Image (cartoon, rainbow, N blue to C red):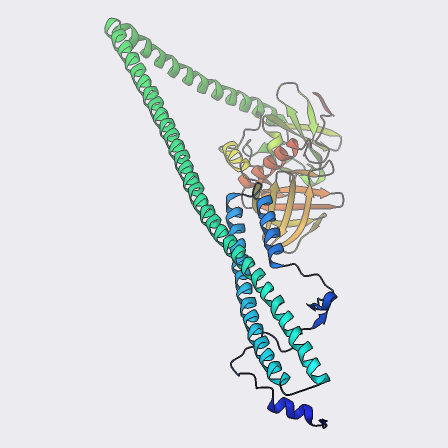
Length: 498
């Protein structure tokens, strides 16, 4: 009876089982897990998580591509086919790797069976039965591996077929994309050519209309000139006589107008001289906007004006309405734009005596002021350089330059980047010429921005001062605001003494 020692297994492993060749490459570092199923069939233990086969994955991808083909654009379809082609290539690579792993398994099983056969002849008894069972298990495993190889070969053929199909479909899609792109480019070129033809036709029509209009105008002018020439040929003396008569009449009318104005002036001056013979004072100065009027004594017997009470009025040249000029109580008064076309009157009260002085005629406008203001109106914001002489009735010591902004909706006074006052046009705002103040009154104005804040501003010239007043009143009138001086909004008197 043969006795088996403890080291029999090691000895058998060393002597009976041949070593595995070094050129065999295993797909994994562990041997697959197998178990015996029904009818002693060897089956591979599957993981709990269900893994789709390669055939099922390919079928699902193909079904999704076919389903989405109808609603995809040409470019998206080409992209999908390219992705499918890449997936097919990936599946083909996986099939190749599985085929290599299967070949490795065949080599391994063959070497294992050879080792078991060589071991079968050296053992007896129960160990021999175990070896025979192992050989049967290896043969069954080889059969299953062969079946698996057949399935892999079939899947490989299907994957190859699908890859060829997807490759052909991708090429067709690219071809279709190129055709659509070429068609779209042709359509765009046709549209551009049509637009260019329309533009050229419009330009040609416009040029023809301009040329025809110009030609008609030239023909009309030629006809008019020809008619005039014919008329002159038929009645030359009569036309020339009428032209000479018209020129003579115009010259006579101009001369008579000048004489009429001169006579009116002389008459007013004579009346004024007669009145001044019995009066103690007279008005001196140009009666025009941009100047100032001064009350002058006519004789040495005239009392000093500092002892008299003075009040200036503006009187309508037609209706005789008299308006009190609030604050004009000095012997000097500079007319402002409100006074143009009106007669100025100064009342002097001395020891119960009442003296009235008036201008010879209405105040004349300043030459060129209207066109200057119209040019400034086009601007959004007009700036004037000014100096503040008084603030809230108190003399201002500084003589620095400020900027007086007259806007469409507001007036602003600034010094550099600092805003001194900024107010929108309102009923509490007042603006007028300075009523008094000596020779500089014609260059200064009074501005009350709001209640409790007022300024007296001196401008660089009389023209700028009057332009600023006219612009501010015009913009305020656009905002439904009547901008004037104190108590200048309503007439108060008719003819006669107040």
